[in-house]
Image (cartoon, rainbow, N blue to C red; front, side, top):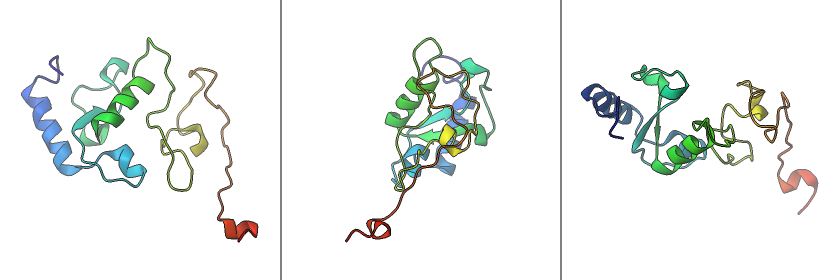
Length: 135
């Protein structure tokens, strides 16, 4: 984290403000876990055309584990990437990544590797055992 813009006073101030406003890791929060964030991530990576000093809603508070997964899964254009920002599902079994195609194609995934589902909507039935007549 020693290269521009991360070594500037402006970034350090922006990072502190984001962590003060949103102290918990956003992906962990989507999983109904409360983990303190230690990293501030650009939602749109600088290498992908994102602003170096975006407004607060262009940043995301994350724990180191989630940040590393997001970077490996989405922000490395020269490597095979999954196209998902966040791994995992919520307690209903739905993907936690709001840009996952399951959520109605909030993001165009046609440029992603073919292993990624591209259906515009996928339906998953999640029910309790009682709904199935199982005791």
